[in-house]
Amino acid sequence: MNRGLEKKRLLVVDDQVSLTKIVSTIATEVGLDVKSVNDPNRALDEFLDFRPDILILDMVMPEKDGIDVLNELMLTGIDTNVILTSGFTESYTRLAASVADFHNKGPVRVLRKPFRRDQLMHLLREVMTETTSA
Image 1 (cartoon, rainbow, N blue to C red):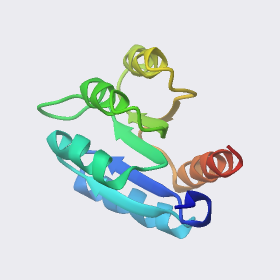
Image 2: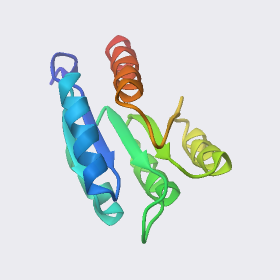
Image 3: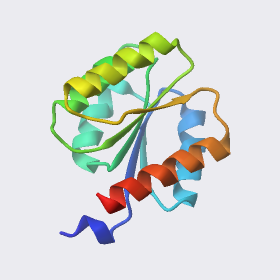
Image 4: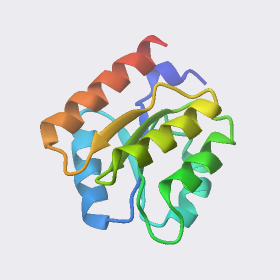
């Protein structure tokens, strides 16, 4: 199957239902096929099933934080572009980026919460362009 002719896939993992709806709407507008997960314990199954080109992952979630989720997803070996979202400290997002780097995954982008619509659109378009040319 030639994934180059298909819509790029985005998986959004965030415990805030309202945020995943907003991100999904914006991502659909820029031409992405989107799935979202609000339970971090379901992220791995959805990731394996959907095999996204781009992952937007919240760093602060109940039960399982973003670093644990990221590590699980990176262990699959599925190549995906990672965008971390957090309103948390910069050191926390640096730690998550180092987890991705450990798995030879990069660059990892960070979208700080709260973010604006235009910031998300710009970042998604940038990553889509990179995944198309790769």
